[in-house]
Image (cartoon, rainbow, N blue to C red; front, top):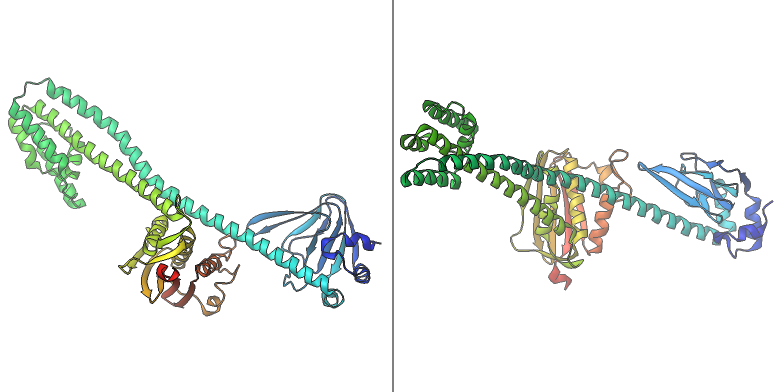
Length: 461
């Protein structure tokens, strides 16, 4: 039989009257667990509260696809608590060492509340702590999941231009060898000043040309014309050169002067050098484009996280939205058309910038998912008195009325197991309220609009 003194060592029971302790013990079943023995399993009916008196136990279970392990010491209270809506245990508990616990059936909770009101109040506080901890874990997991999705998308976005720049650099080495050999060939020939000037003139004109590339059909015709010209002058193995020159929109007649003024072999060396110079210019443009894209993404990441900036500052709403769109470009570019309707006058909000970006990320990401990655996304900003209003609209199937009533509730989600925790819109609402704003949604088939209202920086001041 458990003594009253043993239960009074448990924090939840400290300083309670002796008669109440006696009553509680008399309504419990004493459990003596061997190491490795299970007190209850995950998904068992939640029908009892357990007070651990001796030994080490461990709670373990799968929650939202994640394994949760919680050590339990003497003095812990676990299982279902008064006023809890738990129907099944979310974790299982087993003994790591020999242990002793008291089992109190949940059917006796109404009587417990009457007999031991102070204990009931403490257990409600304990349940609140448990809910806060569960919420914190879920929010942390949700943030990590969102970060993982963003990181994967950004890695893909960074990899494409990086790979293109690396590929262009590799090709550049081969082309530099060609231009070196062609230059040596031309240097070994006795050319007049006029001939050298003609070669340099053509080379400069082709390299500096900024004509747009021809369409595929015109490109094919131009390539055939250049190849035919080269063959007519005995150059039967320069088909690749013909393709390179055609992509630069070089006209065949521009090459005629080389064959008119130079010997065939000299003209060939001049053509190789000119084509190599054109290819170098093209490869340099690809490298510049790729590295610029990487630089733009890095800048967007810094702006998105507000790295190297004070956490609280006046934030340009349009710039914040555009940074988020850049970060989410990997999800947008495969079938989502973005329509922007921004008020031209800058709209500033006194804000924790990185938190505000979480709002746009969640809303835009949800809109993309609602459209299954294909559709029209409209983003609108305007001023209404002392408020900035941001509308994020998608043309997806809409939110059913029975779902719309719960979308801002913690842990509510319509996604499959492991795909969502139900904390995205709850997080959005908390951040918006933290900025003294509000959020509302209007939805019908073909149009769902989330409206975010935030106080203007002038009004904040």
